[in-house]
Image 1 (tube, rainbow, N blue to C red):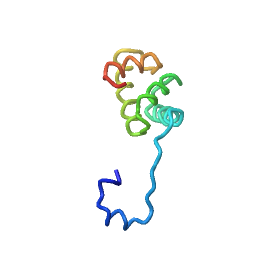
Image 2: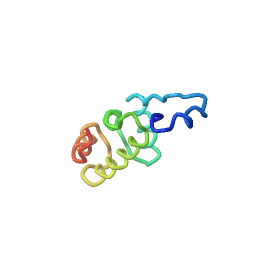
Image 3: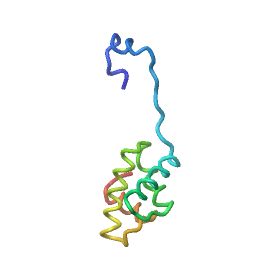
Image 4: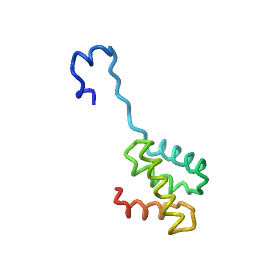
Length: 95
């Protein structure tokens, strides 16, 4: 994205640093924590499935968690499992 800035503007910053995307295991921890905050029961497989499809970004992972939570409350028993998360994300066309 730094290429979208003009060269004189980019030169004023002095330091250019690239951030790495989160790993699936890091995102699984983030999703599990968010689920606890939301009061949702979630299996480790459910957290992994959401993390795997969130493109390395916590914001996307948390958005997907809220959609899967809604699906779990309407279709399931409110608990997010790996299978239920997979079904919900397939229905939402998230790969």
